Image (cartoon, rainbow, N blue to C red; front, side):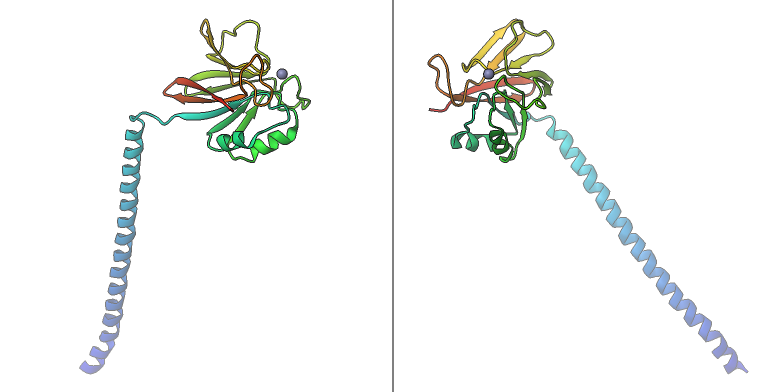
Length: 206
Ligand SMILES: [Zn+2]
């Protein structure tokens, strides 16, 4: 009688023990997952802290490659330079659209305005952009009067480089890539923007 009783109760006890072990494993699993989650959270907070301290440091300059009046020609040297830009701005008179395809194939984003020699009417005549708090206007033909709603006006058309402040507006022209005027060499330019300041460097091509 007692044997039967023992045998009868041993089975549920063993089952109970197995259940306990399984439950313990689950708890261990949950702890591991929980630990992983906490670790993940810690990493996220550390990453956030790092990105917050990053903004305190001086920012890296935004480098914009500016060119105008390519008039059917894009020298290899110009392509080599443009490849390393954050942005490419073409101020019109691209002429052959193949030039634009070549520019776009370099990688950086290309922004362009339509010049008087461009026949693609989908291209805008004026593009306004804000970079690092500065307001830029891109247009091919320089306006007769300085606009009052921008900080920097970039233009082409004259085939003569320009870096001139008129009132509150800075007028910039990178010159012409292929047919320079008035004795200036062919040229392009770098516009570097850091902490709300624009720096202009004309690059003669010969
Ligand atoms: Zn023009």
